[in-house]
Amino acid sequence: MLEETTCCKTARFKLISGGFIQASAMSEANLTRLDEVPIPTRWDEIRCFTTIRNEALRLPYFLDYHRALGVERFFFIDNASADGSSQYLLSQDDVHVFHTSGSYALSHCGVDWLNELLATYGVGHWTLTIDADELLVYPMSERVGLHRLTGFLDQVQAEGLVTFMLDMYSRAPIRETNYERGSPFLSVCSYFDTNTYHHKDANGIPVRGGPRHRLFWQGRDRSKPSPVLKKIPLVKWRAGLAYEASTHVIPNVRLLPTLTGALLHFKFFADLYSNAEKETERKEHWDSAAQYAAYWHVLNENLGLSAFFEESVQYENSMQLVELGLLRVSPEYAQFVGGAP
Image: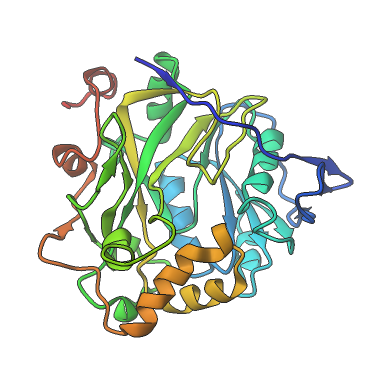
């Protein structure tokens, strides 16, 4: 049975003379394309869309992983990185780079920028809209590529894949979780929570909870709740679609609740300390970076903080998540890809 999401519309931009100008007074962004890589008109490409700021550490493996999964073209919005992110991306022949020094907060945390690129370059394609610290997994994704998955979704007339953010961490203190650029994220952070999700939706998809709630919200007097985990990153894009509040909500998209995925989320590298401090000061993230302030408040008081605890489980593969009840797989999907549910 298909579900359809609904929400209100977001602000939009127009493409003028190689850059973007805002159609309303909500943002001062000016997106400028930096690359000269040709963009083909073929309609069978799976395309990835990402907003970044100082993500040079994660970019090489992020690209390698999603290329292997089946993404054929990447569109990045670089919000004034100072760590060489754009320079690295411009050296890749399947990447397109758009620069802005505009306010991330006034762009609704990058949503307006992403919606315009999706409207310009995503229509007719299966699109993957994720962050540079996320890796997409879904049932049997180790052997079933994105083209096979989207072929099934097309067959059942679904337009998107529902996922949740599965925060990954190491056994070591966060401050000592040093990641080497280009290596698999899971080689450093391979553990996750299985039973700390205090809020799930009607289909059992985790909405709030996990290690970030456990470490930074649980037992603390916070004015705002812990982060929303549910996302819809994989969408067959068509004219008129638009994300709202990151990829947590999108209007009028038919979803298949019997098949779900996860975004393995790698925020718990050692750079969380410096990132939390900087973003707390910048106040450009949602609600004046209230989430980052919560991170920094705890991290600053506990230099030895670790996410690992007695109930942590080491990640093996996507079907492990199915067995644990964190992912759903339908018999129809299993039959389509030639595997047992």
